[in-house]
Amino acid sequence: MDYTEPENVVRPPERKGRKLNPLGGAIALQAHDPRSVFYFKSVRVRILD
Image 1 (cartoon, rainbow, N blue to C red):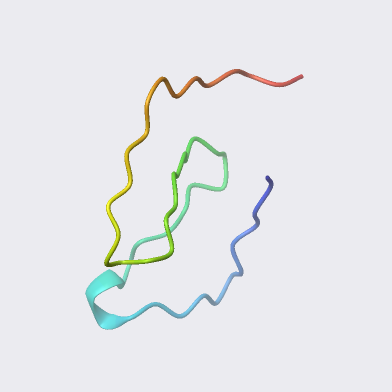
Image 2: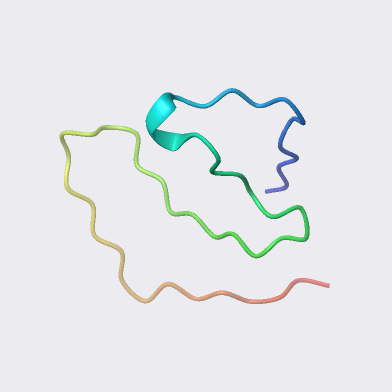
């Protein structure tokens, strides 16, 4: 997935200053339910051309 962060992104006070590097390099595994426990096994990353 590609994501371009908006220039004037607004963050909550506790996350102020946290920005994504425009050159890339961020990898995130996301779970939406904060009360659940998630386990990830054998995650592989591959460069796509």
